[in-house]
Image (tube, one colour):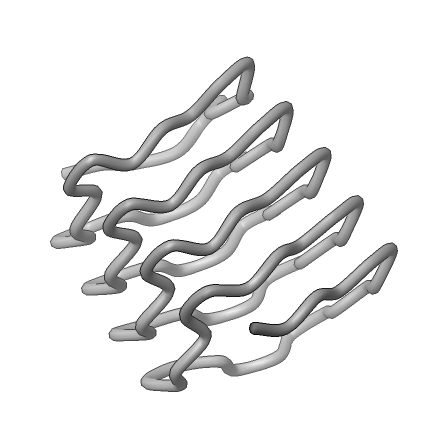
Length: 95
């Protein structure tokens, strides 16, 4: 398990990485790519994802609290039993 607190990432490519079981607290991701990334059982708290690409990512059993996913792409993303509590999803595309 990994924990990131108050980290900022811009234009970073996390595609096809194994990011399972992580905890992200007050982190910011701007224009980052998570294409095909394994993000099962991660948890986010007060984190921001701005214009990020989650195409084909696996977010199964992830929990997101008070996080923002603004103008993100979620095409073919797997959200099986994921929870989004008080999250902002403005402008995001789930097609």
